[in-house]
Length: 121
Length: 110
Image (cartoon, rainbow over all chains, first blue to last red; front, side):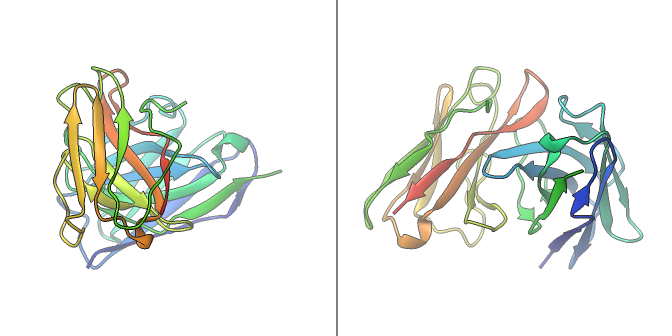
């Protein structure tokens, strides 16, 4: 059974870059899409972007100028970098697997437990 | 403000049925888009309950069903149980921004 585990600094200073890693265990990165999704305290979910195992990416237009998602197939891990963070980026960040991200048909079938990142000076 | 509109809260009694709506536009829910639904208990990760509009993943109770009419998708939970008390989110692709959007979430109280 595939499991996802996010990790990274719990505190990031304003204007710095938030960097998180998601390790995939019990399965391979291959043939799937891998997304990052965040949830601000007490708020709803926001899709950040995805990366396909081939390396192709797609990002939320509202974050596109600041976000980069990458993967390391040898380590079975996916990473996200979000630059120039502000307090508005404080959230629980989830890693999620998607069997497909075909427009109109995508969905997220496996989720990590999430990691809280607080932007705090 | 979320692109997809859900009621902020709903409540029901054990054994009853309840329907959570997710209203969008012709650019998302109303287009050729198949909505997915997620259940989230406090402090936990979201769990996929419905995908491609009406399909249930293995292990999800058949008390959960999905449908769509026009620009509104719906999640119906029949035979409500205490364990169904959670937040529920819908998700759809939107051609407006070529991205994935979630509803604001519905807090279900049983």
